[in-house]
Image (cartoon, rainbow, N blue to C red; front, top):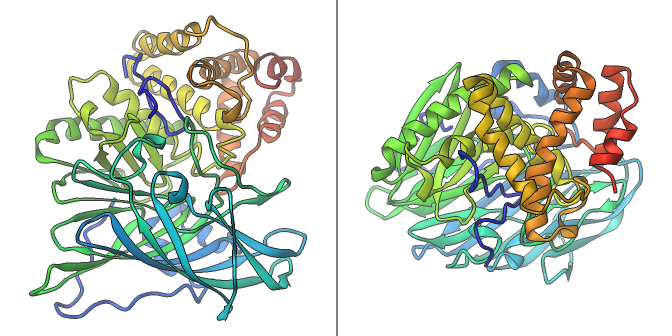
Length: 495
């Protein structure tokens, strides 16, 4: 169990700081909607309404994104789940691939996931398990050539932990809430290092993912309020039984997240074409309304500074997580105890987690090896949120938090650009969440505010829907400012 003052890539936020779901389409009573299948990689029309109009052209621009079709069946006890997955995987590399690797994260998050059968193009394959059964390697009888795709299919069972001891409870049934993070076999990223797979440290995020498209069907007890990534596209409840079937589309996104509770009530708000919803027990309504006010302001600030928010919805759910906030694509989990308009952590948590919709999701990065590209940058974005919303005086409290984090480890000049595994818990908070946020101030001072602001817009634009690297970040900054930033990056970022 990690104490809550350790701040992870899961964005345990601000203990020292001043801290979408359109109306579902109801199917005809008694008629269960047909399950969509990931068999048409070129037909992405179902995802169009989940994107704002200016982002809809991206549906034609990611030809090699994986297409997931997932089915979850949640038992009445809420912690046993059976599932199936069909995924079309395309080789976007310039080398042939002799295998495809999947992460089974429940096996290192305190739960248990067992894959029963694996088929490649309808032919049964025996996979291999490594990394404490968290890595499933599927050998291919015929190597997958560049730009070719293959269809993989598997069935699985999950036992969800009934505690929040590991990784802040991202995957747990606890406090009458079911939180399903990374609860499906997830394809690893293949990059210049090959297949990326490791057992992640407890203090950070566990995932590093490419953009993908998801169709997800959930069967669950009828009394549950289900909230999933993306957009709910259909819902059917049995007339006389106690089960419901809900379907979601999400894409392009880097992950799919689902939360459920019989206690959730919803507060909603619409801002500039984006539907905001906050799901929490009824006694948190005032806090939920306050959070949505901060969310609306955050979307405005970040939309102007970086790029418009890409999705038509943004959902929040309360969970009993140890983290104050955890980011998922188009969805954010907030720990219950800060959902109070008088809680000083709430606004900063909301702003930081929303910043991750740009830095982690829209612009991806290796969250295990380069956490500063999403966590430190989201800390700086939060500082800009306070500055733009309340002026420099209003931003002072959050800047003092950044300084306080770094001061807590004696302002040690530990590089900001280390992998998560190379920091102790206190160093991770002090460096990635403290010194890292201050680095971007130093970069802005070196470049000049006008060029820095232009650079940030260009950085988001050129890396949107892709994965950025530290080298890309530095080279693009130097291109915009026409200057050499080597000394600055060596002083702050690189070992």
